[in-house]
Amino acid sequence: MDLIIPTISQGLLWSLLAIGVYITFRVLDIADLTVEGSFPLGAATAAACLVAGWSPIPSMIAAAFAGMLGGVVTGILCTKLKIPALLAGILTMIALYSVNLHIMGKANLSLLQVDTVFSLYAISGMSQANMILIIGLITVVLTAVGCYLFFGTEIGAAIRATGCNPHMIRANGVNTDITIILGLLLSNALVALSGALVAQANGFADVGMGVGTIVIGLASVIIGEVLFGTRSFKNCLISVILGSIAYRAVIAIVLQMGMPPNDLKLFTAILVAAALSMPLFQSKFNKRKAAKN
Image (cartoon, rainbow, N blue to C red):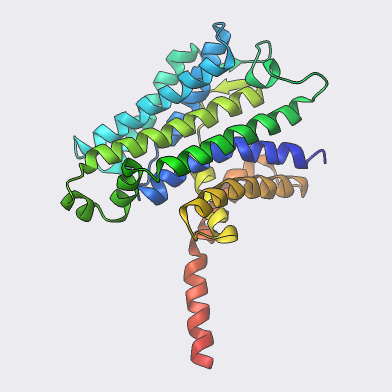
């Protein structure tokens, strides 16, 4: 039980990042590396606001808004300046490193002596681990329901259609530049919100905490799709959330088995590569099976 609750709690907090990555990677069909900058941007913004005396909710709203701006910058570089999406994300990510340093004033900002969303709203007698679990669950449920409802609207459907067939949606009179920017805006807002929550849970914000977040997000998406399926958009959202928890569970297990923490990034990269290559191996296996029959 000592390991289960923190694992699920961290999985829920990071699932917001996974949903953001899912929106760009699967819905828009864009490999967006902005998340490596917008995740610490959300953490830095929330931490700076909390240290300045803001209450947790406005601090997280400010973090999400900062993430939106990061997504808009990438969207403008991609659509208006015709810079390839991958390169646009890299440029924004690099720029946000300096922005995050300016927001915090230094490379690391401690929140140990500051009231966070987990301490300020803690129920008397409840441990912080349980509070992280409850607030994480509430936030993820509200986010997932909001995304499901939004992508069922006309604007949301246009964003999904942009990723599926941009030529068709343009032929129907939709400005795909706007839909791409909106998708990137929403994605990075969720990523920044995830960063704000993770920073408060960990007790600090660090300028380097975004390194490898794109791989973590992809791992959650791929693991969720492989284990829980992609039958519908609602199923995809649930799969991504459960995939994030499953990824955290895998990390906790391998750490308990004695894997050095320094090897986690390598392990995650191998895990994602293996998950991405599974359809290929499955196809070859099915062909060989059919040939034998």
